[in-house]
Length: 113
Length: 137
Image (cartoon, rainbow over all chains, first blue to last red; front, side, top):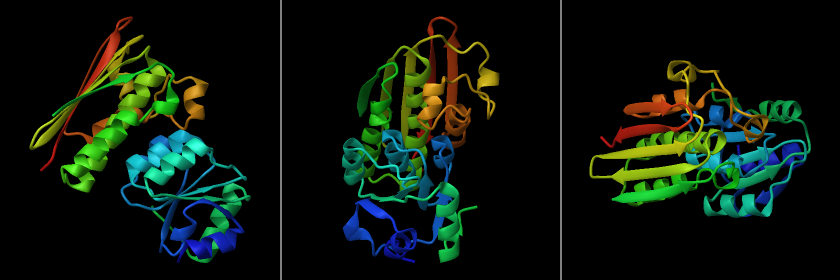
């Protein structure tokens, strides 16, 4: 599915990468633990409640391109700037981690493991 | 090619700057992306450890045609029991470190999984040195 479909399903806002919403994605991983994200072998979408500069750094190291922040967390300017350098897409969902993941599952997204 | 970076105690905002820079260099050198990922994940974990646990330190990187050597040397409290620190899930991280998404006792195990050679030496009250090597082929 496309990121556009995800954004519509979540009623989310896009903090960065509005022009890249036609990107096709299939798998997602949800975690607030960045060391766990660093063990991923694939390049999926990250769903997280952790909204700080280390979220973006971790995605840079782990080659993650899309972050969905839950619970209405908004990335700071520093985070957006760093994410822009790495061609990332940042999406903000007002829903909880649980509900966000439920809606993504409903949409047909697959778990990484 | 030799690169050096300074790590400052508690400077979480800049944690990962050295790893990010090494990533760019290796990409420019056309190193296999999967190998690049292993290198930067290990180095990033080591950087975060130095910032989280020590009083600052240095990251030394040497890149040649077939491998990369990385040394993260800190001045800090040291690790009294390295075997225990290597166990997944063992952590002495402060709440501040956990707030940054780290401190779950996965750092040293993650380094081990991603590098071809890992050597950790430590002296209590002096500091810790993590030496890592990854072959490109």
